[in-house]
Image (cartoon, rainbow, N blue to C red):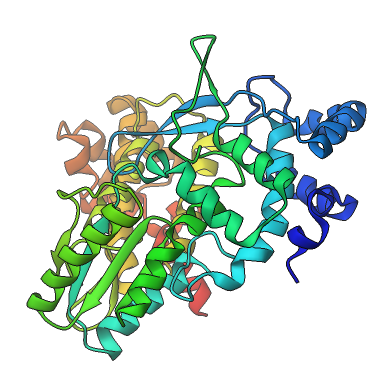
Length: 422
């Protein structure tokens, strides 16, 4: 049953649907929009203003608030602009996304993994490995869509939605969110007919709807592929086949989806090169961390363990543990040897940090005494070698041994994996 065609706007304004949407918005937290109303203040705001909001939604006259642009750094360099809706609009978007998702979820491809219930990045990585290891497809076609969320064509997207949803009030409401303006330098900037604003609950679903015809085209051609949001990889058995796929699919996307392809990031590679969702596949079939992801990990470790950062010890350890645990949870499909190699490097950085925080020979001498170092190690306090070189010194490794670092809270990826394997 298509609940939006059966009930229209009532499906969105259903009390249970709205309560579920509120719980989701509250759990996701997030910053306030242009009106300054936080997630914690949303319940009181809705109780006061809901009758007026509901009446406008039913009449089709509701206008979303302006979006607040926020730039966040991208892992590979540069920045990505998010457009933060007000918490009120996040609630309404979530209330739309729930029944709209029920309508479109059965229409999505099984090889589309991003932002879908019951699917994850790990599922996408496992499918990638299946193509390479089980099916023997050794050529990967990477297709990078340039500024995808900024280039989605509103007319094409709304026609797709209208094929499944015929309620004019619902369609008008979705369209109003696509056209919502931004507040830039205290002035309203209108939308130009393109783009799905990133930052609200509705945008991931709309992105999947927009790219579903691409999935169907790939399936019609019998191609093996994995798509996670706008990240797409296709798998081929030969260089010539991969070249034909790249050329024809790029042309199809540009013609039928009105999207531009980033030619510098698109191309053909071996599974052990580059990466997809942070993973690559070694020549022996093992999953490994992509070199780019490994460098991003090291950059974050350098940032967290920078002696110039004036963090208190407790805060430093808290930040360290949160990052390492989250990182291990995501890269948990790789072999234990990957963690062991990186863990030694992490401990060396921790020892370097300690050496620098002890400041001078007196501080180091006192630290060694507190740590009950052997008398022969005390002479190390006067050493004038650089901190990075000292972090590898056998005496410092003995004083700041792995057990001691763990007792302080400096766990490493290998520590967490070793515990999970017991």
